[in-house]
Length: 116
Image 1 (cartoon, one colour):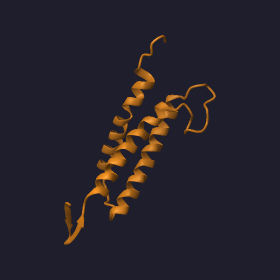
Image 2 (cartoon, one colour; image 1 turned 60 degrees about the vertical axis):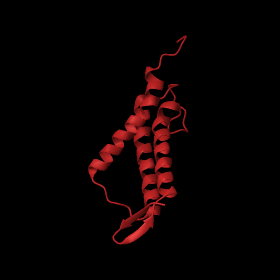
Image 3 (cartoon, one colour; image 1 turned 90 degrees about the vertical axis):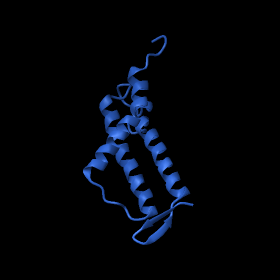
Image 4 (tube, rainbow, N blue to C red; image 1 turned 120 degrees about the horizontal axis):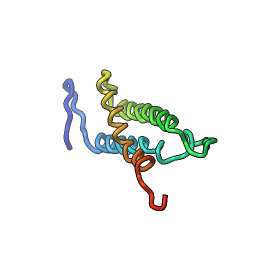
């Protein structure tokens, strides 16, 4: 089992770190696509116009970004201290979240359906 040495303390790094990272990436991918796949506003309220406006989808994307970030901080705190991050870290994560949402965006706005 691989070991991690930090300030003279040896910790075993194995299944839990890899599993948490994989789980977090899958969760981020699913959460980033949900606003484009679900027609209800915040998954509860049906829109009055029949279909959800793009602004609602964008707001849901931002809220889900912070929810996934909170879950990531929770997972990190369970494995040790939370490492403080600078703005670059959050900019890269926001960009990755937007890239993850691209399949849902394509499905909702760019995909041509037969007969339509």
